[in-house]
Image (cartoon, rainbow, N blue to C red; front, side, top):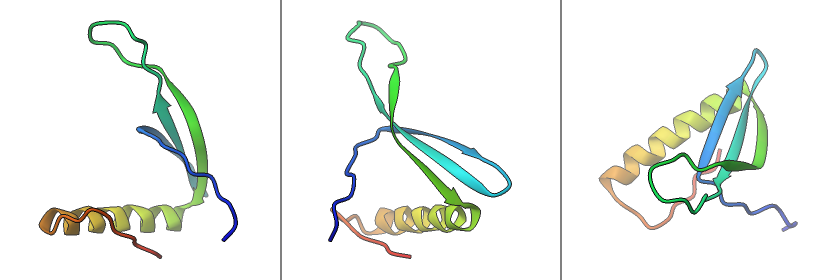
Length: 80
């Protein structure tokens, strides 16, 4: 299998238009300052996908979490 990026993200933003959706995954950068504050983030990957794939992804995530709430698993793979 060819190499592919493997990144960690703990946040995301979502934008969309007539033809597709852009998911920008981000990683928090701790400020190290005490007290409540919003940590700055840096983008780690930007993913542009078609609207139909975005809908399928949303449905798959919903089904995955509904199923895992009933029967917790340590890991699972869903392919579409």
